[in-house]
Every structure is written in structure tokens, then in C-alpha cells.
Image (cartoon, rainbow, N blue to C red):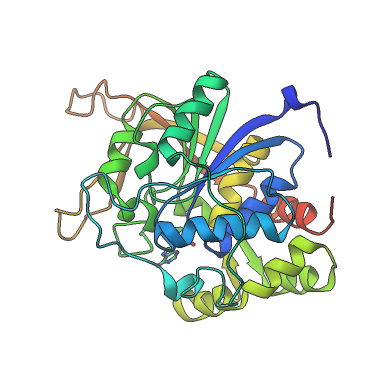
Length: 316
Ligand SMILES: O=c1[nH]cnc2c1ncn2[C@@H]1O[C@H](CO)[C@@H](O)[C@H]1O
């Protein structure tokens, strides 16, 4: 496993586990390219308290309690506490309704935002944040931020406008996307191309790594949801694809431009993500001169699936 510590990309995963979050976290733990500095939690697939419990539990399940967990905000940046939770995607426990025991470990005595700032100061300019939930903890400037968020020129998955993570807190997302940090956004236009098929699932079921065993236990409800909601035989790998863009950025291509997010005050297009495809228009508009982000546009989907499978099918 061990590439020299200095050569590994230092990542903090901001997460709302979540079945595909569990996959992404395990891929990260199994990737010699990455050094996981910690997990920070957010609401999204589940409420924040359950996200923290699940993050601790996942680390316990694979013997990685050396990694700290810092609990994030329970409310949006505008202090909304009526959140959209996706128990119909991940189960009411967020992890496939498996009735796992409560973790015995505890989160660090520091908020997610404080942990992010502390680590950013400890390793200035070197920390990559992989954000797999709404962006409330990240509405501040930090090294590179890789964000699972948005749907660029395609429909959302909450409604035609909104992708779930942007919908969770579009005001936070608008702050983060326009703050000038080095941001890479992975949207549904890319993640809906990366599918873990039934055949891949069978392969995972047949192998005996602790990562595959755990994931196969929790994946049923996620497969059922995709069969019902999308009529596909497989599941979208939103979170793992986002994580893998940190492991091997060359598996995707990117463009750059201004991204703005619509607040939930907008009835039909609240949570909408709109990108100004750079240099397309000559005219000076309200968008001209705004700070840009990178957005993934194409993906080598088979290679992403293969890398994920390869990382999960063996133990340390
Ligand atoms: O309604 C939903 N459909 C699909 N994915 C959802 C939904 N709600 C939450 N997620 C979660 O949001 C991220 C991708 O947008 C993924 O993490 C997925 O697990």
C-alpha cells in the first residue's frame, strides 16, 4: 500500500453516509494515492447526527479508527432545519437498514469547519476536500475542493432542476462555487454514466475482502431504489466517481467556467446549477469576470468501475 506519506494526496472527505458514500470511503482507504486526514460529516442522505454515527461505524467496520471524524453543521447556512433526507435511497439508517450496533468510538471535539480550517493551516495549500454531501461545512476557502454537486446541462435527481447535494443547501453551494477556491465539480452529467451493474455486484459478492463483504451487505436497498426510480439494472456510482477523480484525475475531462446555484426561494428551479461555458459568448453580462470552477464533462466509465472494483476486492 504505502507510497511515501509526502507523495500521497491529503484528503478530507465531507460525507453524509449513505451507501455510495460507504463505497467512496472504502475506495479512499484502499487507495495508496491518498492519505485520508479525516472524515467530516454533513446532513444530506441522513441527518448530521446519523452521518457522524455512520462515519464512525464504517471506520470501525474496517479497522480504521485511527482516522478522525468531525461532526458538521445540523442546519443550512440560512439555518433551515427542515432538510430533505434520502431514506428512500439508502434506508432509514443510511446504510441499507442493517441494524448495525452503535459505534464505540467518538467524533473529535471540534466542528467539521474547525477541523477543515485546522488541517488546511497544518498543510497549507495541500489539502483536497472531497465533498460528497451538501456544502454547508465548506462555505469557506480551503485548498482544492472536489464536489459531488450539480447537474450540468442535464436534469437533476430531486426534480428537473436540482441535484440532491445542491438542493440540500444551494446558498452554501453558491458561496463555495463563487469563492475563488480551486474547485472541481462532478455532476450528474458524469455520475449517471458510471454504473455498477448486477454483474459487477456478483463479482463483489464472490470475493472475500472485508470491504466487498460489508458493501454487499448494505447494497440491496440502493439497487432496489435504482430499479424502481430509474428502471436500470445497476446503481449510479456518484460518490465513488467523485472520490476517484482525486485518485486518478485523468479518467475524466474537464472544462472551466462560472457556476451559479439557484436558491430554494425560486419555486421551479431552486437548486438549479447553471454553468457559463467559458468563452462561448462575446457580450459583457452579469456573469463576466466572475470566479470560475472546473467541471467534469466526460468520464472513462469502465475504467472508473474497474478501479473501484480493484480497490475493493482485496484486503490490506
Ligand atoms: O433522490 C435521489 N436520487 C438520487 N440520488 C440521491 C437522491 N437523493 C440523494 N441522493 C444522493 O445524492 C447524491 C447524488 O445526487 C448521491 O450521494 C446519492 O446517494
